[in-house]
Image (cartoon, rainbow, N blue to C red):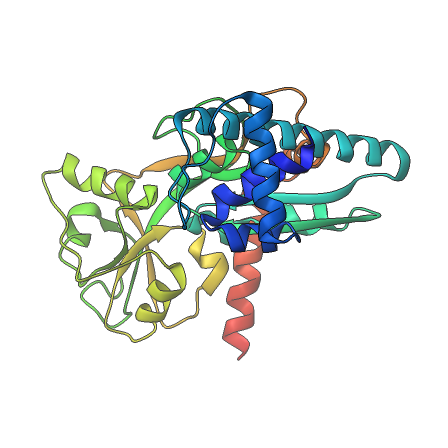
Length: 312
């Protein structure tokens, strides 16, 4: 039995297609099929449901796949650790972040990526549930997500900042001249919101439900870029975390009003799988997060962005 055969299995699970899995592994399709057949012979069970196309895994195959993911993750962690002992921190870190937190992530990844000799980052925009699944299946090393709302399983966490909520609305709208807005008042706006697949939206819905309001937004999207693009048309309003100001600045043709009654907050942080050892790359990113006052950095960067926009 070869580690390479476990790589074939994990690639097939990711691609759900024999030819694409073979391409990912840089082997021919017959070589991939032979490797999978060898695994079946070693364990004495059928792993892949046979057919001209990929139809899935057997029950035994799913269990072997879970072990394969962990074995490959442990191998990669060991390689990172040995490399760090010889050459310093180097390797590939896979991060999954919820969309509303991704504007903040460069405050952590920029100093982290400056470490010699070289680190490589892959950052994916994912829902909180996709992040949990990615960590469980060893497809991610670190997540950036909510810590204090929906349950997190089998992870360790470190807080990064507390998310607050604001309304972004046209400056010539009904709330011109205001310095804040209540949740009840925000319900009457022409709203463009994230979809309910996003935990941020589920949090927002819960605050409205607590005051007896069910939201009925006109536009829903899973893309933060699409949402912000709608705002720039000057006809829409939205509800987002205060960190959106770091992305778009204050002088962007929008009125940014803190939401009150209640003044709600939620904790955002990094999560890693709760197992030993934690990979050196993930450990280093967490150490970086403990050193940085993200709240202070956000305030400074937002003020800088506002000044830059006002000069253009």
